Image (cartoon, rainbow, N blue to C red):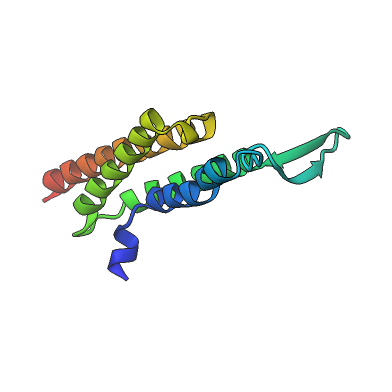
Length: 137
């Protein structure tokens, strides 16, 4: 169970993105899942809003970022390991964005920035928590 909580959720999102969106772009370039309308909603203004794959991915990324920030506030023995894993996941996002053309889109860049925010916030929260522990103890 501890292994599951140590794995950064952005790694799962990266695997999902590569498996679904990038794989489809390479093998079926005629299908664009990122711009495909998954659902549509009629707004009170009467306008119809389409939820695309890209929109859904960014929304899921924001939810994952929130969960990762909540996980960063808990002090545990594995928090440093999780920070290292989060940094490795961010570097994987950055490497893929820079060197693989099939992920060169705004949604992937936004996920990459969310992963960076996760890394920076995780380290910052850990340092602030450690300072408080030192001043209290």
